[in-house]
Amino acid sequence: MSMSPSLWKHTLAQEGASREEVARVLTEAADHLERVGLHKGGLFPISQGTPRSAQPCCGWGAIEVVKGTGERAHGAAYLAEEALSLAVGARDTPTTPHLGHFPNWNDEPKTSQAAVLMLMRSTADAIQTRSGVFA
Image (cartoon, rainbow, N blue to C red; front, side, top):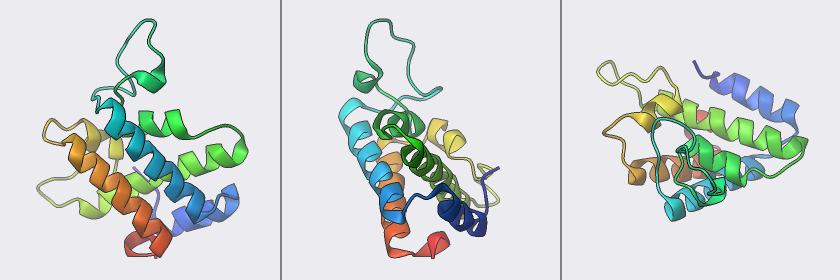
């Protein structure tokens, strides 16, 4: 289960990451995913000898590739992952529940790469513009 919008905002302050940093992680992850392709069923396929940065990946795998190093980078990546789950949770309906969990939605057979990219980019935009659940 993902965190609530109010807890996300509180955690943003605690982690010391800015909205811009979280949005940047999501945008760069979407760009990366667009280059390498979507993988379902894990962060990355099991592939010997191929660097992760060159392998297809899921949305969270893309965040892991682009997040960088250091505490602030870790905080921004964590908040980006939670933001995606909040965005999926906001789209849940009684007939299509994903329990507000982005990995479940990402791995659904009917979820396309285009849908994942659109969710990542629209979430980045909502964070920056303080709209929707990120107001």
